[in-house]
Image 1 (spheres, rainbow, N blue to C red):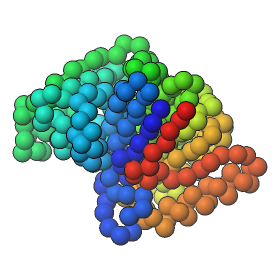
Image 2: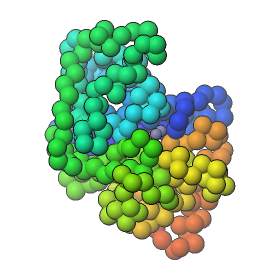
Image 3: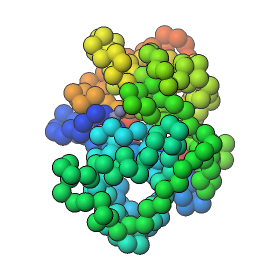
Length: 280
Ligand SMILES: [Zn+2]
Ligand SMILES: [Zn+2]
């Protein structure tokens, strides 16, 4: 399984010299299996660059999953150039019991007065597939879902191919319970033994005093989850818009020190856009 991050910034894209290394694009992930399946998760601003790459490659068939529909996860959708090519085929999977009408929510980003180009100008063939089970098999990928702790709901994904597992939990608040979310123990079970966990680590403890119930985690809560679930690697994700590269480096140092204090083994790092991993 190949995993690529096209945007790791949370809430709003940023730019400038202070953000060069970790990048300013908002969330968009690409996952490929050995059979050629190309799965995209979320349509943040990183999706614009992904679209250019896929056109260069001549790829025309994609699967799309959404964690949720906050602006930072949908705003790149109209800028995904393969949308305007008739030979493009996109299958959008959704869980209506949790996510409602995913087609309507995704297209809302192009509805007046938000965007000049109407959704009817999309020439790609988009097929919507409602999922009834909590899991989905897509090519060689087995995908399980979990309800996130986030305002307006969200879904997390555990993706396995040939015994290797990637877990993607962004926009997830571990320290606060949500009526339709999941418990800490459910998250530990969901992440158990993963080869790579990418988890929301937006806030410091000091910031969280002001942002509780905004739907994001303290980075040290993500570290504790990774340790409790015995995952091999933790990538901190959904970097706050004010977090400079140097500040992110400091967070990683602090997280690694906490792992060392507990005498545990965990490869903890911060996700940068354009990072890629091969799990095999
Ligand atoms: Zn977000
Ligand atoms: Zn969100």
